[in-house]
Every structure is written in C-alpha cells, then in structure tokens.
Image (cartoon, rainbow, N blue to C red; front, side, top):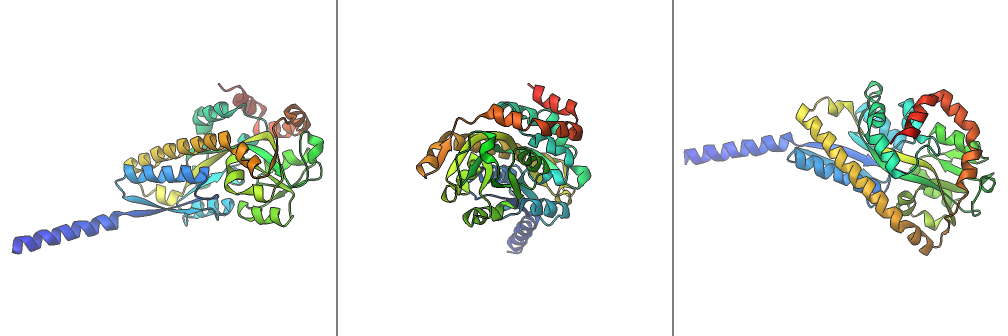
Length: 320
C-alpha cells in the first residue's frame, strides 16, 4: 500500500509538472477565423503544438486587431505572436517598405520565390534590431480596388475618390500620385467607415474582400493588382529569448507550415472569389488598363529609388 501511495504521489507530481510546463502562446491576426490569416495562424499553431508535444498551446485572437497596435504589443511582450500585413511594418522596420512598391512583383511565383529566397531572408534579419523576431513571410495577396461610386478602368477614374489605405507611407504616396485621397485607418474600423460613407473605397486582396464581406458596402471592384501584399509572422523577443534552440527550431518550422497554408488559402479564395463577389452583387472590372496605372505612378518611382536604392529595387525585379 505504501508503495502504491508513493507511485500515485509520483504520478501526481509528474502530472503537475507537465501542466506547469505548458505555455500559452497568445497569437493575433486582423481578419476573421475563416480567412486566409485564420488558415495560416491555425496551421502555425497546430504544427507548433505537434512539434512541442503541446508544451506550447496557442490562444488565437482573430478579427478585432489594430495591426500597428499588435506589432507594438509584440515589441513590449504583452502579445507573443502576430500575423500581420506589411502595411504598418515599415513604421518599425523601414527597409521592409520596399516590398510594398506598386507593380514590383510580376506574379505570385515571383513574389513567393523572392521572399523565401535570400532577399526576403535579409529583410527578416533586420527585425531583431527593432525588438521584433520575424519568423516567416506569410501572404495577403495582390491588392485590388473597390468603391461605392463608379467603375474604375483607368487612372482618371480614381481621381477624387476617398480610399482607405493601410498605415503605409509607400501606398499613401503611390495613391496620391494618381489623384486618390488616401485615408489611412485601422482595418478594424474599415467596414463601418465604408458603410457610413466616411471613405468611398478600399483596396485589398480578394481573400480579405471576401472574409470582411465588403460586398455588402461596395458596388464596384477593379482587378488592378497594383500591389503584391505579403504579410509576416512576428514574435516577441521576450518569449523567443526564453526558448531552447530546439523550441526555436519548432517555432520556425511551424511558421513555414503557417505560411504554406496561408498561401494555399489565398490561391483557393482567388480561384473562386470573383464569381462569389459577382453573385453578391459586385460589378467586377477584369480588364483594367494596367499599363496606364504603371505609367501614372512612374513619377513616384524616382522617390522610391532614392529611398530604397535603385539597385535593391532592380534586384527584386530581376529575381528568378
């Protein structure tokens, strides 16, 4: 009996130790759980829990986050991980703004290969100096324009429109160059702003337009594809610095799984999304004068070359 009691006590102690060893990882993303951000974040968490035998367990906060505030929380250590667009990131790591230049990437393959290759990894390496750990590039997709006023085919059609943009100086400058009135605001405020007419339109990838149900407040959509919008899994140094090397490797491998799942969801949503938006009453312009938009934005490229280096821009454009 005494031996049995000792065994039970030992088992209880081990159970308590196991419970104590489990760490909750607080993870945020800005769109609903059913979105591409949700798919990527859930895959990241599932892989992390698997690779650490549930010693790290995610608590996901979906759909109600100000991305800039989330990045600040990661810096402070009050949030562990955020899956965020690059929109506000250049306010923290200015060099990342280069990937937001309009018409920089040819297509998805070009963008993904560039970010997963040495150029993208060099950019990720700049984050620790700013108090942030960048685990991996995830994805938002190519951005398109929607509005409640009129169909947009050429640059003249956007003049005077009040368009919500991300809190991103590159995007703001590019839109100003073609006569748009850019209105930066947090994504969490956008639906209400569109509904109340505070802004006329917005620009986002198809998966975001779908998951945010913008078809309820926007009549027109134009497939401008003006910017490829990557996103990032960012982590707090406070948690990162507490990890063993093995657990750091687990977080990085989990981030790769999250990235793959998020990109797949972007592909799936884009393949089916246009038909769905049309069925919901959105008039979709598929044949936009892309060359006219590129030409109209040419003047700001000189500014981007000064800011980010013409050789750095060309290196991305030429990457294969």
